[in-house]
Length: 133
Image (cartoon, rainbow, N blue to C red; front, side, top):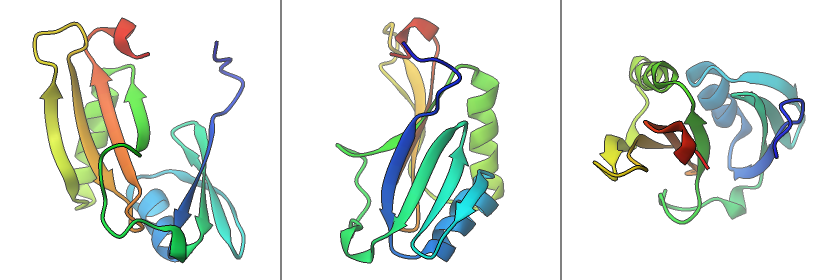
């Protein structure tokens, strides 16, 4: 069971720390926690995301499956605010906001973005909160 005092940690490769910082901090409004020569540490919607400088390990093309990460919002207005932020910041979706599993209990809205190193991010909102896990 998740304790809200704990923070989930994810480390991903990036080819350029400056581009990663612009994307996550300037565009997605994440907070920069620390910056080192070889990585940046971010407050990514309440969890810890570390972008490690490792240009040889980035994907050449963004692919939504199987590897991606992101946020499942509890509140629809938070999901919608993220969509507005992406549009205001002129970021490109690799999959536009859309409805999945229409009419089923696990029905949800989702969208996908790629960061400058082609790490894929998914943001979603389930209409039935019991389907978040």
